[in-house]
Each structure stands twice: as C-alpha cells, then as structure tokens.
Picture 1: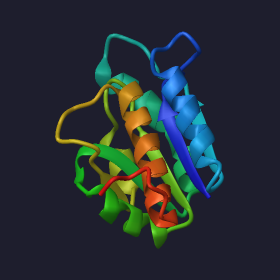
Picture 2: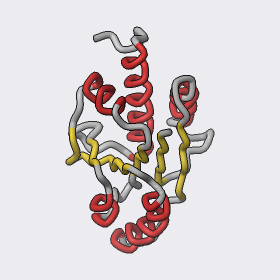
Picture 3: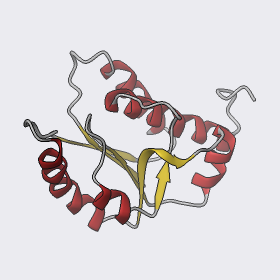
Picture 4: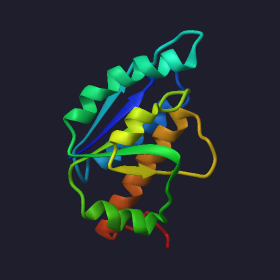
Length: 149
C-alpha cells in the first residue's frame, strides 16, 4: 500500500481539487492509496513554521517502512524508470511539504528523495503531479496505453 501525506488541505474550491480526486480514483483501480492531509502551520517565522510542521509529520514517518520525500534536489526518473522502481516497493510513504518546503529533519529521516522537476512547484501542484506519475507508473506496469512511449 502506498500513502501520501501532504501539508495543506485541498478543498473543493481549490483549482487542484478535481485533478487530485480524479487521479486518486484512477490509482485506486490498481492499488490502495491513502492520502492524509496535514494542516499547514502559519506565522511570521519560517523556521518556527517548519518546526511545527515537522512535529506533525513525524508520527507518519515513524509508522512507515520506506519514506520518499519530494525535493527538487532529489532523484530524477523517467516515467518508465519510476514505474520500474515502484514495482519493487509496496510500502511507501510519499511526503509533500508545505509552501515553506520541508525541514532537514524530515529529509534526513527519509530513505528516498524524489524530484518531480528541476523547477520549484507549488505544493498543491506537486501533489497533483505526484499522483499523476503514480497513476502513469501503474498503467506502465499494467501495459495500459495511457503512457505513449
């Protein structure tokens, strides 16, 4: 089973809500996937925000077998290589940071770091891109024509 924990709550008014719901629906045809949303913290001090967010994320990390953080400095994959990499792993927790990113403590506790792009993406959009790539990987594994490579 895969899990995604994401800082930020996407509600029906978010422009990213429809895509998130659509990819969750598609993914769940192939495999169970849980999405946990964690309320992002607020305040004038980014370091204090990251510290609070770290405390909210740590319980998810301690219960996970393999943790994958999304980070622009992480490993880049082609979609086909990502599909192959995922095929060898069944218990993954993907962590999507907030608008302030992710504290080094969270990155240090992860076994893997994944870059979705060399660009910095808004965290809401990064969630959609991750879900789309998970779906794409599943269709590649299944031989479904969604991926036109």
